[in-house]
Structures are given as C-alpha cells and as structure tokens.
Length: 595
Image 1 (cartoon, rainbow, N blue to C red):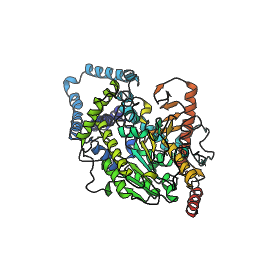
Image 2 (cartoon, rainbow, N blue to C red):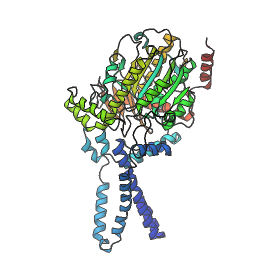
Image 3 (cartoon, one colour):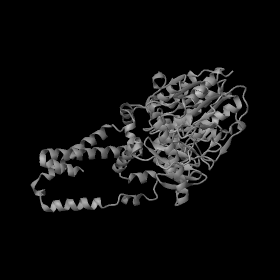
Image 4 (cartoon, one colour):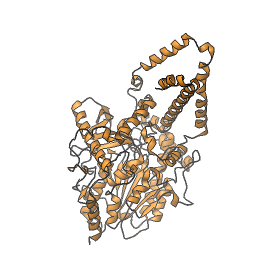
C-alpha cells in the first residue's frame, strides 16, 4: 500500500513522495519498537486494548512500569534518526544500479514468500511466553484491531447461529430464575447474626507460586497454611487475564459487554453483592491503594452506591507508598491498605461487606523493606521444599516472588490484627487472585487464569479442599445463597448470574465459562474437562494441567457453547440492558419494605 501511494505521489511531486515514504518508515519503526517494548516489559502482546485506556491511565502504566525510562526514550530517538539512513544510502549514485535493485527485489520477494507461521516451529513445546515471542507483533496488533472493529459494529456481520441461550428471554438472554443451591451452609456453624464479609483480591496471585503443587512452588507460606483450615478450591479460574473484570465478575457474576463490564459509557442496572447486601442493612466499602478511577473501578462503586470508598487520596503518613519507578508509583503498599481497613471499619453491631484490592505484586514489583523479603526468599530457596525445576523457575523470577513474599507477610499481619478484634469470630474472608502474573512465564494457556479461591472464617466447622473446576463467576451466587438460606437475606427472584455456583462450577451441568484475556480478547472458554483457546482444544486433568488434543466433536461442542455466550453477550451490550427496569425497581422496593 505504501509503495502504491509512493508511485502515485511521484507524478505529483518527487519530494512529497519521498517525505511520505520516510514518514511511513518512521511510523513502522516506532510502532515495532513500542510493540516489542510492551511485550518485553509485560510479557503480553499489545492489541486493540491499547485504545481502551484513557491518557491518564496510559501515562501511569508507562511511568510506573519503567517503560518511559531514559534508556528506552534514547533508543527510540536513535531508531527515528536511523530511519534516515536508508534514504541517504538510496540517494548515493554508487547504489543506483540494476544489481542493487534486483538484490533488494529478490530479498523482498523471498521474505514475502515465507508462510505466516514459519517461525512457530521454533517455539513448539515452549511455554506461552516462548510461543508469543516468535509471533509477529505487527500482525497481532493489526488483526486485533480489525477483529475489534467488527465486534464494535455487529451490524456488519450476522450475529451467528442462534444456539441455546443461557436464559430463555431473547431480549434479556442472561436473565433467569435464581435457583442457586446453598452449598456453603453445611460447612459453617450458625451465628447469632449475619456474618461480616471481607473479600481480598490479590493482584497477580497465581496458583503456580502460591501452592506446593504449582510449577514454581509455594511462596505464600501464610496463605498456604490458611488453606488447611479453610474451604479451598484448587482448580479455580479467574474471569480475565487482567484486573479490569475481576470486580464485576467476582461481586456480580456479570457478563463482559464489549470490552469489560466497567468499560461501558453508562453502567446498566445490575445486581451485585454490594447493592444486595446494602439493601439488607450491610455497610459496604472498597479499599484500594491506587487510583480508583483506574479501569473505571470507582464508576462501578458509584453505580452500586457503596458507603465507603478508600483509594490513594485517603492515605496520609505514616502510611507508605510503593517505591517510584520513572517518577511514578502505583500507590500505597499492601500493609497500608490492610491497616486502613482495620482503622476505618470499627467494630459495630451492623454487618459489613468490604472488598480490598492489593497492589504490591504489580509490575515493576518494587516494595519497601525489600532487603528483608529478599532474605526470606533466600531462606526459602535454601529449604528442601522446592524441586530442582521449581528452584530454577524461582531464581529466574526472583524480583516477582520477593514481592509475593511481601504480600503474604502483609496478609499474615492483617489476620493477626483482626484476631484481636471482637468481630473476628463473626467474619467470613474470601481470598483470591485477579489473575496470574504474566510477567512470570506461563507454562500453559490456562495458567493465566488459574488462581486460588479460599473461604476462611472462625465459623467454619473444619477445612475442606474442593477439586471441582470453578470460576469467579460462581462466587456471588453461592455467597448470596448462603446468606439467604441461613440469615434470611432477601435476594432477587430473577438474576443475570453467569455462574451456576461453586457446587456446579464449569461441570457438564453448567453452561461453561468464558474468560477474557484482555479488553479486546474474548478467546478462552472452559467446559467440563476441556479448554478452548483461540480455536485450539486442550484437555484439562485433575490438577488443571492441559495438553492440546484433536477431538472434533468436543471442539464443536465447546465452540457452539462459546458462540452462544458471545452472541448473548453481543445482545446485551447492544441493548445495554440486563433485565427490565421493573425487576430492579421492584426488588429494592421489597428489600427496603421487608420487616
């Protein structure tokens, strides 16, 4: 295309044609550098999700991750200057020969003849990072944007086959009767009043380094010990490969919409743990050490009219920020956020529900008191608890795992402090990760989503480990069923939960679960013991390990169910309604008027 424009412009003005060629080459070089740098820093391929962050969010990401370092900027300037070299060489008379032209033509023809997947052979058998490293960053970026454009304009393509829907209402495909069974109740002692609920979402807490069974090993000794006296799901999956969807799926079992539920210009009326528990006389709150406007988290909290929102604006000394990189910090350390919740939420007779989102395990993994946690890392490496392979993985990812040890210690101190409170005995804690760290190489596609799910409370009769496959979509239905059946919490009769609850999970009784890798990549789907990822089918074993398989009937089954979800999701974000307004209005009228 660039060559065609050049030929046309030559008839108008040769200098103008040369300027166009130079600008085009500069654009290609700059974009290639940006795509490479993003992949090198984040271990993720950059796609259309670039355009779903506002300028402030992009600047925070670039500065806090160190991508805008002096070295990177200087190299970019050198590359831009270097784009003049081909034009300078081309202007020299010794190069203006038929032999040079033929050589360049042959090289270009040979390069264009290479198959698009030629370099994939060199990554066969490697982990996801190795496979992505040989992929064309340009091709992925362009393909991602084309796909995104078609998704944004569904009228250009047919919706596709109208398969069995999640719900029976075509106008509201996710709407269905609330029939989630209370599977949690039998594991708890009955309290005199409804227990408090605290959900802790840990940034980047993957299974691979928070469990002895993980391929890196256990670098969360406190959390691992807590599992033994908790309800623990070792085969739990997050709903996305980034933080953008964790709040809506974990606390609302809500669909993704086009680029994440929170990305919509105006959030449609919806049910969630926040507004349902608040309607049942719970105080509600959200605690975060960063800027709550990031990923539109504050918009979600505002739509749910929570009572308390704490983000970085609410912190003062002696609370400490995370160390800066490139003049920017993500916000306050995990210790500060845990202590802030203890400070703000006083012991009271009225129940409360809070969500806490941590930050210290985010790239660039800079923490306070790093020397102490590096010492803990070295001590852990000296023990006999890690295999040779786990030790190798750990040494290659030392910086990330040191931040994980810091998080684990912060949580340990948080629970010790909570135990001294009078309301500790009547509080339920839910702990999970928003996704696994992509900065630690993923051994398989499913590892991006494989995160622990822990429900702990002094009210538990005993600990129990569940091996069935579940997702974040299943948490809200099960928690509300527990509160409804045991404490008379009034819940809606019709809901739009995507999940079927923790008893069913992604089993054959479910509809399966979709997972969104990034804000423009809805390419993963799990149903039963199968995982469909970007068209490739994988078999999942009892420990969430996976192997690619060829099974056309199973692939067609998952593709059909996945397409059903995507079609229903398109109907939802096109109509911008989950259910008739009357369902929402009538529920809250009844909740307020109940005795």
